[in-house]
Length: 135
Image (tube, rainbow, N blue to C red):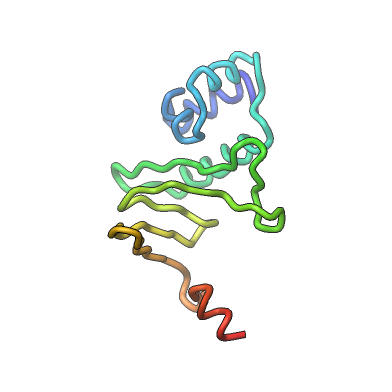
């Protein structure tokens, strides 16, 4: 998606260039260049826009902010590549994994972080230590 199509898409979802830039983690001038056809979004950012559209279709709670988290250039996007996406969150911030798993930072106390995980019933969630014992 680029140029006029991107502008129409952004406006259809009620996003300003600033809001779109914040959601995608890019500079507002980058969005402007995309809309003017000077540049095109990378494949990763195109996927991020699809994820954003999916999230917008599902709706958000009033006042809920969200940001698409994507790998930086040169950073692997999957564990199979030997790396992982590193995310910095504050207390009460969330990460959405796929459509139905939400990980929330409940509390930060010294070197301990308490996470809350909302997931479909029946999905087994284990600490790595417990998963290794279970094997």
